[in-house]
Length: 121
Length: 106
Image (cartoon, rainbow over all chains, first blue to last red; front, side):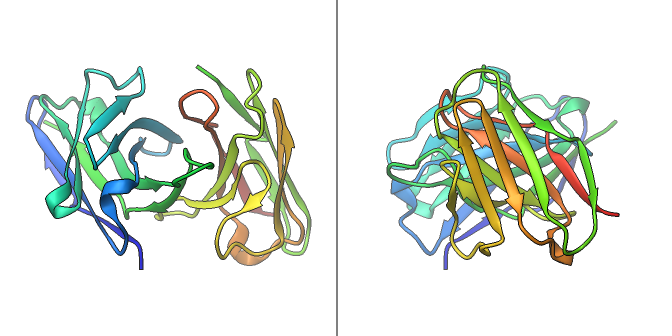
């Protein structure tokens, strides 16, 4: 069974750093792109970026370039999303998801449960 | 950036009725469009990809159509569990989502 399990909810202060995780199981982690999606409270979905765990090729949406860092450790089938200096506006639910492989690559077929990040002084 | 505009913002229908949701792209995305369903407190679920292909285990009452800039998600006969928020997403030029349509019980 394909699963993506994300790390637990976080409460942080502005200016703090944070790294959240997404561990895949039940499939070959290294050959599927992983995407990160933000959902701010009461709002829609926003595509942040993607990573290919096999070689850590990473691409970002323009809005998120320079704001976050996406990484992966293929030895433990885990992808990460990190911030160096959080802002209140980073408060959101963050989802990781697997991209379909092959001719229909670019859609998200399996999703993690989400990690709620709250940034407040 | 390709902008996807969904309409209506909210759709109020009763169980058993037919639902028609629209997604319009700011430029052609060919058939590279997907639909997702998100229920309250849950992660999104892929329903339709490449405009008309049903994802694994998605009931036949869900269907997608369209190409170019205009797309439709149709739910032929609404079940109580179908009331949720629906998003479209394109993969033609990077990736973007629409703003969502909330399907609520009338």
